[in-house]
Length: 132
Image (tube, rainbow, N blue to C red):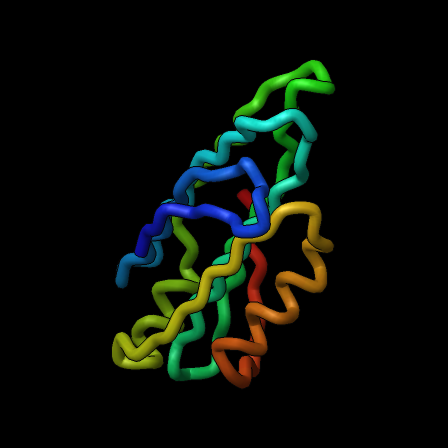
């Protein structure tokens, strides 16, 4: 799954993210955000993949983009690829059944964002965090 990201309310931040999860247990979570305005912003991104066996995997990232009034990069990029036996096992136990939800915000509490995104995919018997 992948998507372009924009924010309302005049927030001059935008970009994209991509998450791929495979039956082998491998995954890739990457993205790019850019601040084109004067103020700086903190970005938080969370994707939750919940398999039908009740195991949920939380892919999360956070970083800062600097605006005109602060020195530093206007961009926040992330990329993480690896393989987890627990993903392969959950995929097999679920017969490939899954649901997913991604949420992206600026200047938000990452913990609250993780909690609300997990709730959006339904009951999770087990939650496994993956930080990018």
